[in-house]
Image 1 (cartoon, rainbow, N blue to C red):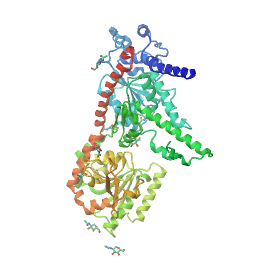
Image 2: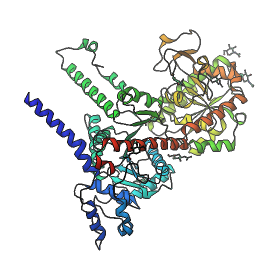
Image 3: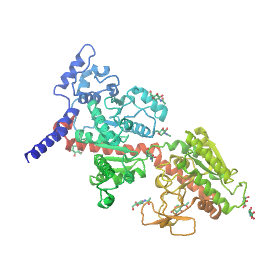
Length: 618
Ligand SMILES: *[C@@H]1O[C@H](CO)[C@@H](O)[C@H](O)[C@H]1NC(C)=O
Ligand SMILES: *[C@@H]1O[C@H](CO)[C@@H](O)[C@H](O)[C@H]1NC(C)=O
Ligand SMILES: *[C@@H]1O[C@H](CO)[C@@H](O)[C@H](O)[C@H]1NC(C)=O
Ligand SMILES: *[C@@H]1O[C@H](CO)[C@@H](O)[C@H](O)[C@H]1NC(C)=O
Ligand SMILES: *[C@@H]1O[C@H](CO)[C@@H](O)[C@H](O)[C@H]1NC(C)=O
Ligand SMILES: *[C@@H]1O[C@H](CO)[C@@H](O)[C@H](O)[C@H]1NC(C)=O
Ligand SMILES: *[C@@H]1O[C@H](CO)[C@@H](O)[C@H](O)[C@H]1NC(C)=O
Ligand SMILES: CC(=O)N[C@H]1CO[C@H](CO)[C@@H](O)[C@@H]1O
């Protein structure tokens, strides 16, 4: 009994230390901090500032007051020197800037901490990171971006140079971008470091890495653009600042449980459990491990004030996993990544390639990989020809032809390509199918400018940047009705008429018997080539989609008015407008800045309500 009491008291004490003493440690400098800084300022030669373990809070003071925040990086070492301009301290300006500030002081600077250890990589995640840094700095002169990175071998300016080369994001105000290099726990977030239990390992790694980040410099707002949820725990417990997470991919999904022998903790799952079989105990252990992780992830998610999903797929998954977020009233919304569609569209408008001047071609821009389902297209296309143009051996203007455009990056891709070519032979389609392989991007643009139609046959593609490019460039998409192309991209502005849902204001959809989720049971119309599926929004509504060969028949034979020049022109301009509104850099920037406004409001309110009198003003 006493033991329990003692344990409870201890836990409470630890909690108190974490939530009250540590915030002071990270945010508020020691008592005589001004004297310490003045001593360095008044010293005849440059010397290091002695800060002991309070590096974060001292650095915060310096950064907030400096004319060049980026000077206070720790690229070379973790010691603090004072920037020469700052150290002149004319009229005590520098030292005065450092003082405490009222919460509502409109001159108070804000430190936005971007937790993105692989900041120097050149992937899609980094594109989002740097576009949002750009928007953050543009939003307000008071904003300072801190990049927490583990790329310790690259100098700050070189990283920015890389960004400019790779993403054409130039003219970033480098003075207000402060790199904090993380050296102590940098390999712990690498999945390869952990031979077993890599997910929990990475979670713990990201907790430690975030603590290291806070020890170097604590920000006012925490932004995770890389998907390291472990960091939310120390940030919310200790710093009590608002958190924004841009999520590309949930680290745990309910689907993962399908691989386990026991899929849930329900009793009915365990009818197969054998008390004598050691494997069943292991399986049970696995289930418990995954369940604990799952709920820990859900808990971590609840710490996030604003969650931005990169698309509908991610949004819907997060909504079902981060179940506590809604209860806490936290925001969960979609913010599409910046796709830079404006450059594609503006040219296509000025070049003005209207449908009638385009070739009757079905363009498929995709890497040669099995999941892109080029074969399905060949099969359906051949059916379409057989049904409507038996014995035809040469294409003419009423028969569209296919262009497969893509790159072969691996030997696997090459063998897929070889296989496809032999299928074309077998189906006697050589006169109807062209291959364009490994061409530069300018050639891709050329094909996007002269083809009428664009195909996409992949099942459940999370996004499909290629389809965005079709629309942006005025190519009419004929795409598989699933995931990204269906939910995010080829969307119309008038979704009410369910009967006609396969043809839309921006393009056309199809489904296939070969889809992994095709269930014969829900098919209603028997011998037609229309397949019935659940509505994207409401599963009680069933919608019929044509198969691809049926879609070809409808468009090119039965209902040619659907693709009359006037109709295609409408679809084309709808599509261009749509991608401009949804996927352009400009849209990303404006929406990002709106979220920053929300964060700024939260920042003030958390300062006021979650911190003590001293914490409030530092
Ligand atoms: C800051 O402004 C808000 C709204 O204007 C107000 O509710 C709050 O009391 C102010 N806080 C302080 C510390 O002045
Ligand atoms: C980016 O930085 C790395 C590391 O310094 C360098 O090897 C690479 O060449 C750079 N990339 C570009 C596009 O400049
Ligand atoms: C849009 O932003 C991305 C990176 O965020 C960049 O690579 C691209 O060049 C930009 N495009 C335009 C048209 O501004
Ligand atoms: C979101 O991120 C995932 C993982 O990187 C990617 O597969 C998907 O295409 C992205 N979605 C969008 C809309 O960019
Ligand atoms: C194209 O060929 C098909 C099949 O031979 C034929 O039915 C059709 O009329 C032809 N169209 C034109 C425009 O010549
Ligand atoms: C097509 O070919 C088949 C067999 O080769 C023949 O029986 C049929 O009459 C042909 N049809 C046309 C329309 O030429
Ligand atoms: C889905 O349903 C919601 C609410 O019922 C509605 O606001 C939304 O527009 C619908 N979306 C689509 C794509 O039908
Ligand atoms: C061009 C076209 O077929 N547009 C259709 C898109 O979908 C809406 C509603 O389903 C129809 O009303 C449009 O005619």
